[in-house]
Length: 103
Image (cartoon, rainbow, N blue to C red; front, side, top):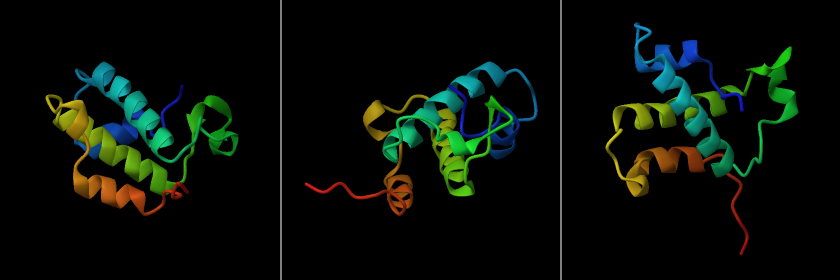
């Protein structure tokens, strides 16, 4: 799977200038992207977001920004338990665009 943000975008967001953590960041981009897609009830990256190849994604800015924020939580809070990996403020922010589930 491609990520919703590039390694370059991720490193800029995380303020990482070295390449020592690239492999870890790429892995976390994949996880952050999967979490965002799942949260917004998308089974995969929509075809319309791909440009030129399956490796290049141009997601809408909102989804890129949310992915960056989730990535930051994953990167800087490595030791967090799975139940609190995303802060309540983060969840409130991304819920703004989520379609509600009707019970």
